[in-house]
Amino acid sequence: MEFQYRTYVNQYQRLVYSKALHMLGNSAEAEDACQEVYERLWKHISKVEDHHAKAWLLHVTRNVCIDQLRKRTDTQALDEELICERSDGNPSNALANNQLSHWLTNALSKMKEPYKSLIQMAEIQQQSVKYIAQHLGLSENQVKVYGHRARQQLRALLQGVDL
Image 1 (spheres, helix red, strand yellow):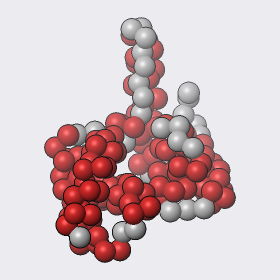
Image 2 (image 1 turned 180 degrees about the vertical axis):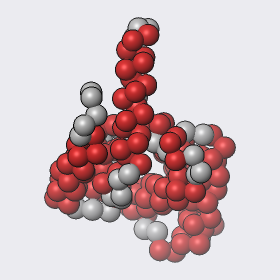
Image 3 (image 1 turned 180 degrees about the horizontal axis):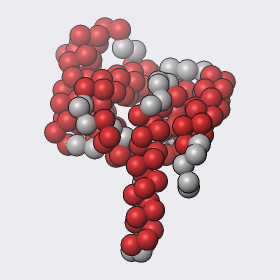
């Protein structure tokens, strides 16, 4: 059991950390999240099958990060690390990107799961339907349906915003 635990940690530690860092945007918080993921792995090691270990760890990492994001008191910064800002060195582009980032962050903070994660993974991270389905524990059809609903929600939240 201990060997299996060490194998999983050694094999997936970079992936787990990078997922946590990407979601949280802070290395200290990402390290805390990884520690919690590994604690959960230790508790549930007998239930984790070899061929599902990667998906299990990523799913738990996502859940731990979501829990940490919910605990943050600064809700305005909740999703800023997921918004790509590219200004091409042009101050007016930087200002426009900053405003767009603010609008998207605000809209995403109002969305519930799994819609919020679907927007982040599909539209911002450009992940495949298959990857999202595996990562969120949904069928590919559910990902497509929920993705459509998520885009509708985001569109409604951004209605009236002068893009």
